[in-house]
Length: 263
View 1 (cartoon, rainbow, N blue to C red):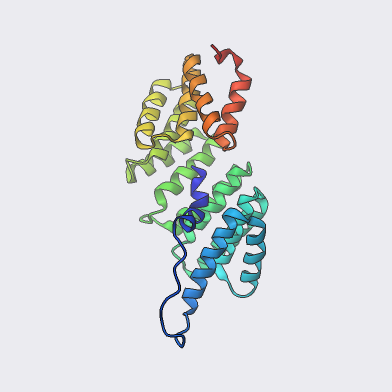
View 2: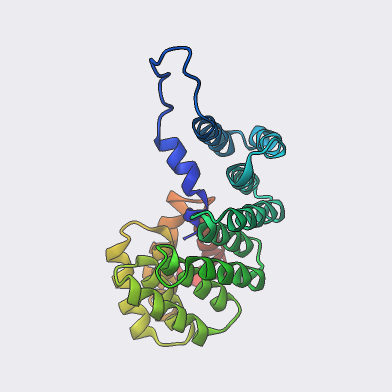
C-alpha cells in the first residue's frame, strides 16, 4: 500500500525527458515549463541520488519553488528513510497546497500520513489522513484510498470498529479496491473471523495478483488457521522476491519466529 508514497518518482522514471523543442531561439520557455522541468529533474534525483535531490529541492524552495519543491524534498528524505524529515516536508507541502488551493492537497496529506505510519506513529498519521479527507471532500478521487489509509491507522491503534467503518465507506465508493479487501482481511483475521478473512483475501488476490502485501496477509491467515505449510510457502516466496521490502522483512521475522512452519 505504501507504494503510493513513490508515485511521482515512478511517473518521472516512466516518462522520458522531452527533447528540446525546435522553436525559434527567441521564444523562451514559460515559468510553468521551467518549473515542470525542474520537478521532473528533482524527482529523478530523489529516486536515484537522494542526497543531491535534498540540496536541489532546498535551493529550489528557497528560490520560490513552492509545493513541488517541498514534495520532492519529502520524497528524497523518504528514499533515505529519514522519516521525521520526510513527514515535515510532506506536511509543509500539504499546507502550502492548501493555501494555493491546489488539487494535490489531499494526496499530499496522504503522503504525510503514510510516512507517519512508516515512522511508527499511527496517531499522527490519523490526523494527516483526517486533513486529507477534509481536503478531498465527499467526491474527491483520493477519498477511497484515504479512507483505507485512515482504516490502516485505526487498525494499528487497535480500533477495529473504526477501521471497519472506514473500509465499508471506501468499498462502497470503489467495490474493486484491492487494498480495501486486503485491509478487510487483516481486520477480520485480527478479530478472529477467519472465514470472512479468507474470503476477503481471495478477493484481494484476484484484484491485486502478485501483490506481496496480499501474499503476506494470505500467509498470516493460513498460519492462524493452522495451515503451517501454506503459511511458510507464502512467507518464503515473499522473502525471495522482496527481501528488503517491509513485507519481506516482516515475512522473514515470522519465519524466524515460527520455525514450526518448516517441513
